[in-house]
Image 1: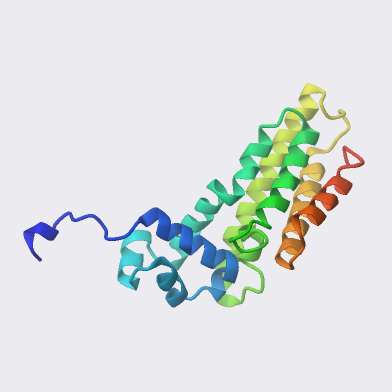
Image 2: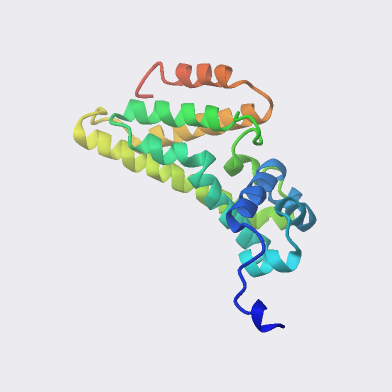
Length: 199
């Protein structure tokens, strides 16, 4: 190795490559995304992939984090809404919007990534189940806060309300992956919130 090569920066944009990996995992799921698919999309060799991101599971975790900060950022934004109903409305609208963005895969990476996972996809399924459970916990905690401030009735069950909102959002993601339009999915979200809070 020449002295000029020591400490030389990587010859690729790590963030842009991670974005490409996110798209591959989102479109093909963990199991469906081969290392060849990933390296070709990212424009790097397997050696560079391992050096920069670790193994496939490590890359998947990083891609999921990238999804949460990018297309999935609506979750954090929704949690900042001033009322529980507005939290739920923003969460469901975000699910409809992010699942139907032009130029990106349809649906939700957190739902699509583990569908039809076989034995080798069990790790990804577990990672995504944990990720979705964390989102539901964030919603539950926010709805619990709404009960404490009187925004939701004292008899409300924050856990059930969070599960309700998350289940509708996951259904929206599946419908988006099947080709449903954002406007149609928004109508589903609106219908789900007509009787708020859910009993």
